[in-house]
Image (tube, rainbow, N blue to C red; front, top):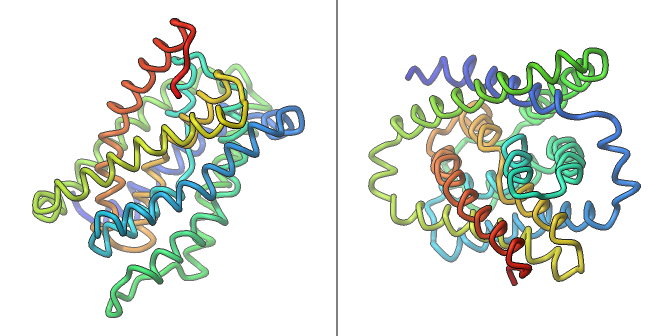
Length: 291
C-alpha cells in the first residue's frame, strides 16, 4: 500500500466518512441530555479524559515500550469512542442514550484534549533526534477532521432524518471495511517491527483494552451508577476510535511505527469487547454484577 496515498487521501477520507456517519446518529438533544443525566456523564468523561491516559502512561513504563509504541498507546488512550462502542452497548442492553451523549461530548472535547495528551507523550517519550510534533496547523487539522464532518452529519440528520437512518448502516459497514484495509496496510508496512515486538506490544495493547473496559464498568458501579449506565460507559471508554489514532499517527505525525498500537488494538478490541459483552449479559441474566 502506497504510504503517500494513505496519508494524504485514503486515511483522511475514511476518518471523515466515519465522523460523518457518527454525526448521522446524533442530534442536538444528545448534547442537551447531559442536563438530565449529569452524574453518569461526568463519571464517564472523568474515566475517559483522566484515568485512561494515566493507565496508558503507566503501561508504557511497566512494559518499557519503545518510544514510538509508547506514544502510539497514549495517542490511542486519548481517542474517543464511536459507532462501534454504541453497537456493543446496544447488544449488551446498555443505556444507548447515555452512549450517544458521551460520544457527542467526547468527540467535541477530543479536538482539544487529544493534541494535549499526545503532545505530553511526545515530550516524555520521543527521542531527541525525532522531528515529529503536533504543530498548531496540525492541531487545527485534527480539530476540523473531527468536528466538521460530525456537524454535517448532524445537519443531515436534522434536515433529512429518514435519509440519515437509511445511510447509517451502509456508512458504518463501509467504514469498518476501510478500517480493516488500512490496518492491514499499517501492519504490513511495519511487519518486521511488529513481529520482533509482538509479545511486548501485544500484551501492552491487550492490557490497555481490558483495563479500559474494566475501569469503564467498575468505576461507575462504585459510584452507585446503574448497571445499564455502567455498561454504556464501559463500552464508550473501552472501545476507542482506532481510525482517529491511525490518522494522527500516520497523517499528522508521519509515523507508521506510532500507528502500530492502534492497528493491533483495532483487531483485538472486537474479540475482547465480544467476550466482555457476553460476560455482562450473563451477569445481568443471573441477577449478579461484575465486581
